[in-house]
Image (cartoon, rainbow, N blue to C red; front, side, top):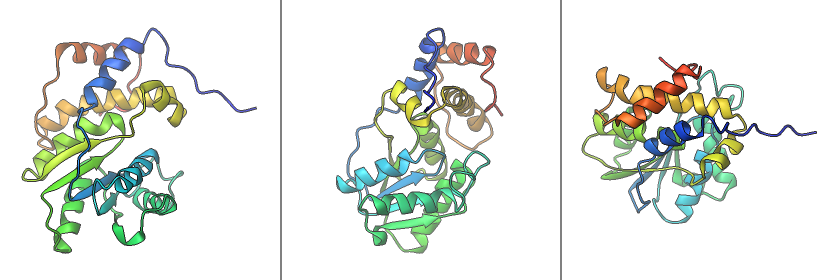
Length: 220
């Protein structure tokens, strides 16, 4: 019998929803020069990138990402390679896709994508970063630090929180990732990896309550 995905506990829902909403940049998708699919364990990133391509949001895709300990089993040939294959299965022409297969973190995703496009002589004034929903704010802050002159739009598959948890199949993993990305907003700015972002008091309080509840596996 299939195992049902555990539901988000009612006691945690308010704080999880606060973090979920905070990380969503609320950008409206609009046409840009390049769509950049950020590698992760979530194949939905590639699915939505393909959808946006078919909606003519961009003529060129770069999938970027090697592997992390959390993805090597699912994507043994690398995140970007598997994303490319999935997008082709969804009807994206192979010639519209570039693969950057070595980036090991979001900063490298941005830096290596920028270099790949520069090496091709591409004129890039605007990009769309397609990521997991809770990675939007960190991806934006990282890009504005490392590629400040490009116009950035953030996008994720438009799933409600509960549907996203069901798509991943692991509620604890999603909560831990939300908590970890919230910490990274301030920590990465301190370390010079990203621009500074406002962290409202109610977001900080929700983050701390989830840390106190034991969701600490993705803290740095």
